[in-house]
Length: 305
Image (tube, one colour):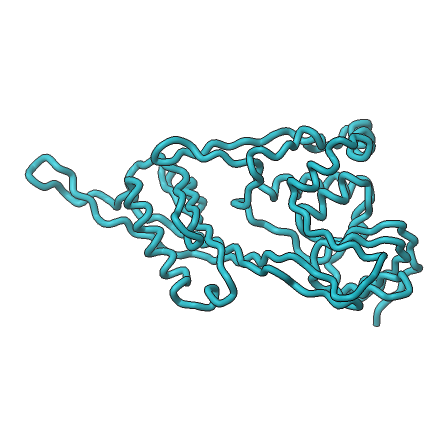
């Protein structure tokens, strides 16, 4: 049995769980309904030229050492995401304290959010829709679907190489991030890695793009960048022999990326496929909205940036 709460009147609502949805809510003081679990991918970075200072955040630039030179990335999206969620929560702009099982958008301008035990209704004038997970009542379609795939791998007995980033030559194992190991019992010098790939649905199902093949390709790419295995005696009394580099696939995480299309006309539903950069560029000249949130939180000494 679900308990029904009285309808809440909202002029404008944002629905989504992506960083663009959270940014749009934050920059415009719009209440948001988060419709699925937020991303926990700490290797999805903003571009290093995204102007975070204009929306009240500190710029966060990281230089990752390559075999030759450096690769520069912006802030991890999870860092900005968690900060915005905290600030929106403090302002009471996150309308759901639970993950909904479904969200129904009706033609009579009523939005109904269902959980396992409760039903919440919102009377709205405008909805800004950023993704279509758990949405019903209107006909939506996913377009340009791709999958960002992150393979975590353990490095066994590597040499002391300080390379932190390797760039691939295609979308399969397109990037490798080498980081200090977080395994139990790991030594301070131990390192592991994360491989990023971008795949289609067909590739995701194919063995040719499995974590096994990703491990083989990553091993080759790391060897080309000076990584090798543990010591194995000497040859000719001078040269130190090394075993081949050994990687072990630990975990694969898949994140679906897409644009959404609404297949029916509805003036009250705005489909938004903007990127973080586009949203920031569009609103950074209007300082009133983020300033309203930031000033209130600074007065309470709880602002996180």
